[in-house]
Amino acid sequence: MPAALALSRVAERTLARALGSADKARRLALSLFFRAALGIERIFHFETLDDPGFAILSGGKKVISRSRLGGLVRAVTTEGVKKLTRATEAWGALRNRRVTLSLDEHVVARFTRKFKIPKGFHTLRNKKMRAEKLFFLHWPQARRFLGLVVTRGNGKLIERTLGFLRAVRRCVRVRQLRLIIDAGASATNEGLRRLDRFGKTVFLIRAPRRPGYVDAWKRLPRTRFTPYEEPGRYKGAKLKRIELAETTTTIRGIARPLRTVVVREHAMKGKDRWHALFILHDTTTPALELLHEYRTRQHHEQGHRIGVHDLWLDTSASGYPKRGRPDRPGFRQGPLALCAWLAALAWDALRALGDALPPRFHFAHPRTLRRWVLMRDADLILTPSHLLVVLAFLPHRAWLRSLVQRFNAAGVGLPWLGGRRVVMGFDARGRTPSDARPVLPNAAEVGSGSAKSCGSVWC
Image 1 (tube, rainbow, N blue to C red):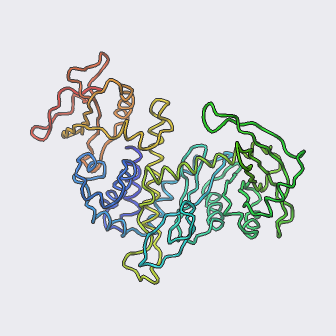
Image 2: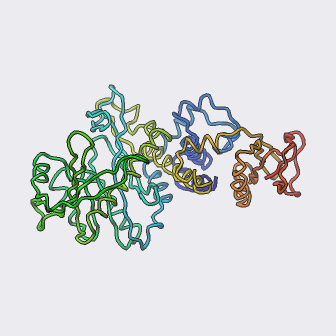
Image 3: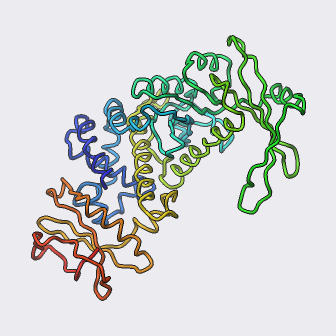
């Protein structure tokens, strides 16, 4: 809830001008934020939502209608969304640190035959199709998204890489920046030459598996390879055997050959797997450490999968206007960037919630947190000064009490409910713990008529 309140204040400053009022901006931001957090798949599902708890979370007395929410999404401007994004980016956490970031693209397929939008290659479907792209900058160590750029389906990874490098330099001063990039940045020699100009940034780039490259790696002498054993794919599996070798690759237009780390993974059966990394501007880090550093990119890939399957990232609003010309529909970044960025902020908030729970929930997926913590029946009691959320007490989830106590100590108030303070507690009828204490201060008077009696409330 504190993250949602901070987001609502930023939305009122940045989106109110385009939408006509601060109330509309707040409702739009909160509706999309909690849509991702609670797993509402599409905007048209708001047509059947009538839960009063979700209405309060989204900034009103009733759930916003499907048509009104869609109209607000289409009404945002690109400049307003960029201001909201800049105001909610967490660049300060990188200050004066040696940090490794990951940049990758996520292709959102658009199944339209009416509008001739540019095509992009969809890796999961293994074909070119009409699509739009989301380029996320990710911090693998903290497992959070730091930035977003949306483009048409023909957007190039190298162009976005250069833009993010300039943004990082402009926004924060880091001790050393190390960037992990997929093979899209090394597809052409021109792209590698452009990256080589950023001499203070270390790049770990997956080399393309071209036949010429692979044949050269296989011709390396066996004495150049150092064997290692790594844990298997699951607990109790056989150790995985790999071999590392260092060589160089000559790129036309770059004065010095690129340092190349060649990896050979021994297969349990069948052919061995060969792949390599191009390393720019780092000649001292051991090869095995570079390989492990590159593998932290898996947290970025996991974040993409969570965005698709848990936060419904692929159902974000399209960038092409539905009332545009079918042959030249254009591209509006605002609606797509707003939906995708608010989903990323929702994931950051859910990660923080997981860190406040027992250790087994620290890396839990959103659907796990919904099942155990968020999606619970409760009675709502509205008083002149408080909103009481009364949860049914479950003995096997007694560990929620510490989370409820920390929430109550934060003193969260809702501006759209007249500043009422939100207080959570458990229905203690017949189950009052020995160390329980009331959560409703004596100064709060229960309003007659509108308040619903629920027995004693304890935390």
